[in-house]
Every structure is written in structure tokens, then in C-alpha cells.
Length: 340
Image (cartoon, rainbow, N blue to C red; front, top):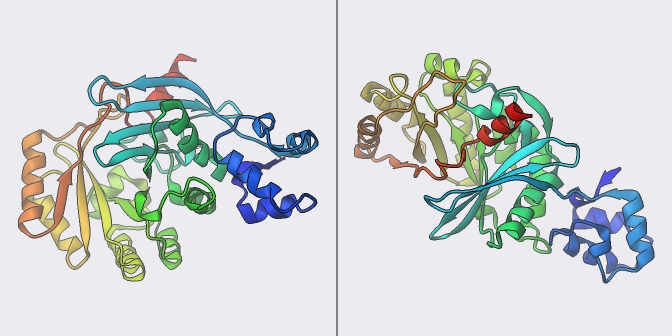
């Protein structure tokens, strides 16, 4: 059965070609308001509502867990999908607006050593409509308007490339949520062919690359993807991406004690990034019960930041949000699975 929320307005018009021309627009508007059933589309004829119910799947996730931080107001959702699988979404509140961090897959195939999302591997990829649901129903449940989206939750977005691109088209649609591309960030562990393909689309989103180490030995140890596309090949793809889009790339860098946080490593990172307009986002590592990796101490993080900034590289330390509610990727889903 076709999942109706994954259709563009043009495709919906084709699917409803036997109806008056304006009907597709009505249906599309209802879908992007987050209705849970076709019966809620009250300005449609009853016969059409029944026809839609018979011919299409309308997704609407259920809240399994909702945790709100007492420290900063961050809200984490564990959603149950129509097939019983679960994904996480995080709502983060900033002075410039509300940001929702969404998942792109159920589980993750990439195997990064520091991430709870990948434990158990990939179950399946999310559809465009299911990703849109994360934004829509987070907004509806929280009562907070969403102004920014980051694809940094469970899963590797570029491993689900076609569905993610369709989601971007849907959420950017002027007839839908109309979230501007410059308000969207997409994070990848470094699937080089997809980065190059994304560059050709020239979308004005922010590309965030999970780098976490500037040398192949260390990066391959914690990120298996590096064995396929090593650091220099990844950074060359990033240079191509910048040349095509003129968009500065953000490099995510988890600070791991006695692994990637030394002054020598910072200087090597400077060498690797030379000539590439970049922003480095240092991330205090989250403790994952199944991982032996531990976060760097604050002094090491600040020293690393200072070395980069002294050479003109923009560098910030990510503010930790939702530390009291398992807000890091995969933690809540993993905890739920272990209690079933």
C-alpha cells in the first residue's frame, strides 16, 4: 500500500487525477498538519475519505516515552512506528528558535564505537513520510513551533539517500512546513560517493561531517567507514562539496580521552583542514554503557579548542543538552529494548 505522506504534491495530484484539481492540495495540507486519520480531513467528501483509507497508508507514530530535561527543557521522544519499530527524536530549545533532531533509520549499519545507535545494527530505513512525522508530531505534541531541523539522530542519512532527499523536498515545500534549507543540517559519517552526489544537487543545507580523528589509524579504530573512505579521500570530497555549494562544512569531533584529544592531534587536524572553510564542533563524549571509550576532561577540550582557534579555525564546544534524559542518539531506544 502506498504511503501517502511520502508523496510530493505533484505525485498526489497524479494519484487523485479523477478528482477535481483542488482536492490534492486539500489532502496535502491536511497531511502536513499531522492528521492521524483520513476522517479528520473534514472538508473532503466522505466517499473520497473512504477511498483514501482503502488505497493509502497514513502513518502517525505513537509516543512510547517522553522525557523532559529539568536542566534545560530538552524533550526526547521515543516513537513507535506503524510496524512496531521505534526511533528517537529530540527537541532542543535555543534562544534563536526550536531545533528538532530526527532519526533517518531504525538502527544504524555504520558501527561507530562511541554511538549507542549502531548497537544491534540496521533494522530498516525510514520512509520520507516517517521522517516528516518526526517533525510534525514533535511540533504538535510539544506545542512548540519548529524552526530548525538536524538529521543527526539514529541512522546514517546518506545510507538512506533517496528517502532523505525526498524528505528534504517535502519539509521544504511551500505548501507544507516550508522549512528553509539553510535551517536544515545533515550529518554523515563520511559516505564519499553520496557526499559528491549531494554536492551536485547544490542544496543550501549545512553538511556536518562526523570526523572525530584526523588520522586513518585512529579513525578506522572508532569508525569502520574510514576503512572504505579514508580521511584524505573524505576531505577531498568535502572540498568538492564546498566548491559546488559555497557552503562551509561543519566537522563534528567527539572528544575521547587519550585517543584523539592531544595537542599533536589538534595540530594534525589543522594540517588536514588547511584551505578548507570549516567549522569544528567539539563534542564532549557521552558515556555509552557498552563502550569503553570515555570523555576527555574539560581542560583537554579547551586546550584543543585554543590550538585550533589560534590558527584561525572556527571552533566551538557543543553545549550538552538533555544529559539527565538519555538525550544522546540511541540511548532511550536501547534502554527500551532491554526492558522488553
